[in-house]
Image (cartoon, rainbow, N blue to C red):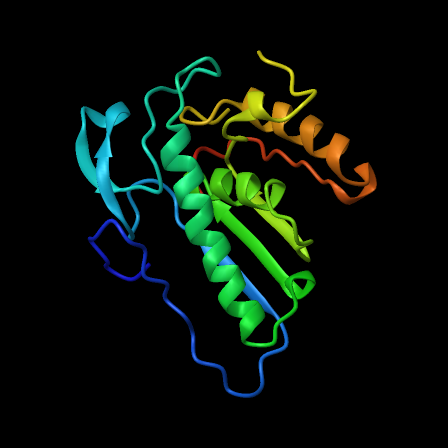
Length: 176
């Protein structure tokens, strides 16, 4: 999402050196680069965000229409890769924080099977819309969100294919 400051995401696509047979789609976290919109959690400041975030509690109201629209945008990107002769089961969707949350939601609402999902420091948005999701140290994304998400994921796919790791001292970051 290279420096785009419109409400429509523009993907940054690395040129291929040879015929492409697989794809990895990575989604940024809140405040990185990408579509800009007001974020309630950050005093309505306009910033790069896939959808609005109102709070950090599991019971916080969620931006259902924004989440669903963002997922449709990502599904369109996946569809474009499929049109370019990359089967969906050769596409990995991943992201960090808000991008990881959107990756999980998108993958769980797709008809097609993906090769995999990598979701770092995130949560499952609109978890109440998925059956069997329980309600219920990263200072921005509570560890409980990860635990809830992994338990939900295990009900949807082979539990042997779900890995959940925590790293002592790791804050809300991809590296230390």
